[in-house]
Image 1 (cartoon, rainbow, N blue to C red):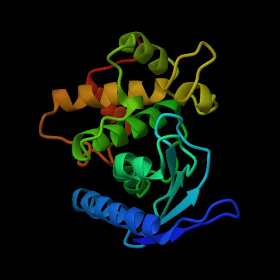
Image 2 (image 1 turned 180 degrees about the vertical axis):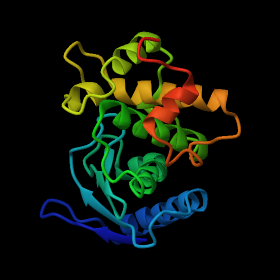
Image 3 (image 1 turned 90 degrees about the horizontal axis):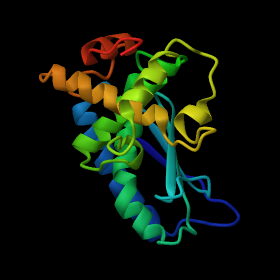
Image 4 (image 1 turned 135 degrees about the vertical axis):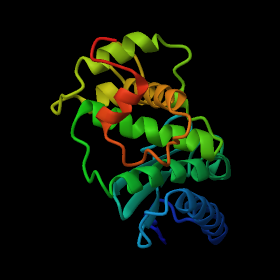
Length: 218
């Protein structure tokens, strides 16, 4: 793993901040690689100051491909940069590392269902192994059966509005794809108790749905 700090004119990470981020990131990557040994030895993680983050957490990340993970941290977050790093960076690296491992078999997820399953697997991996339940994985207060039926009715779509399905929909619903994906993965694991989000890292979206006992109209 190689860690890179990308400072900007507006903000440069201090030595103490870099040391803390490096320690947490390296620990998280080491634990994730123990569970996902196929993770690249050459994984690059870039860390940059940015306000393009999740409003509640002060950070956001994206697995670009199997060898690259980008992490944004907002240095102006109201709770402070230390709060962001201490509370969220470890779990975020877990989540994105799962994507990087999955990209070894699926370099690009094109379908709506494929993206939902990918996010569900990474969210359950983060929740169960980093012991950090992400906000976007909580489906307890939404009509998840209805949302699941809605998504499965469009599961093969490759031309879809990613932002609407995975962030904010036009009717103000939030994180639909993440929540449905998490629910489907949870159902699959409940039905197949010897599996884990790690063992299923390379399972196809269709196999996960079948394991969950879901159909297009269920």
